[in-house]
Length: 231
Image (cartoon, rainbow, N blue to C red; front, side, top):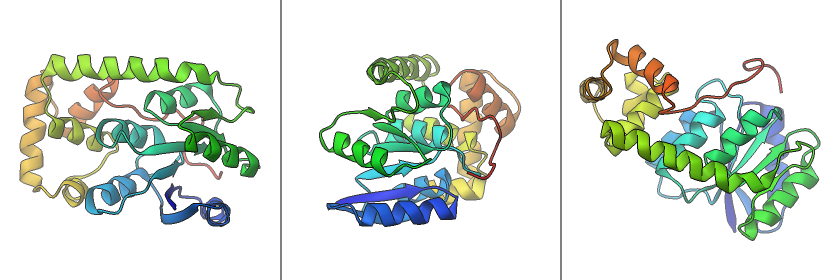
């Protein structure tokens, strides 16, 4: 049985997906979460992990692009289907560069999501044909992002823990939220941020780190036409 995690903050959509997944042979819903922060907390605090994640993009806390970027670095074996009401090519490319296996448009999704599941069972990527994105670009996007990450992390000599903190800071987590995921004290988090800022030659504490990380593509956020509108 393939365990599925659903990460989406729009309840009517979640209900529809849960029904669809549980009625699909060989699949069951493991858990439903409302944003990327909850997703990361689950991954860091549970031994029973999903085989597949259905990940929305437009979420209030930690959008899907940032969450996908995190999974790319720390849980690269987890297969992800991006599931969104948006179809902009930039968003599609960002999700595929982070390692997503498929991208499905939320509108009238059933037959397209089923096709995505069939493709992923064969370790093949899939893009909803209504989107008009060239799926053959996926591997190139992934390789470019990996190369970019390696060059950036090597240039600044960042440790895995420092990289993880940068990505959590990018979702505007406070120290208590980071503590709940990494189980390190706020004082330790502050020390990590000071060390990161020293390596990156920046000032401004947490805010300065966030701005620098986004400008220099140490992490990514979704570029959405309208933030958090009804889906």
